Image (cartoon, rainbow, N blue to C red; front, side):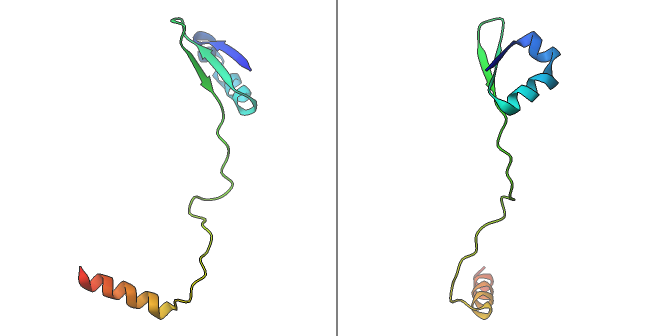
Length: 73
């Protein structure tokens, strides 16, 4: 684990981010508080990429449901 002071982190942000890609990085302030920085995992998929659902509903059934829901409003 790499450790930086706040001043070092400011001066070496690019280097700090390279370290954070591989492991946790700690940044210590003058008042003694410590923060950790770690890279998030890359999402290989879109959050809208959801698995399909098998159903017996037909396109006509779905369109009828939408139509009746709109008529109620």
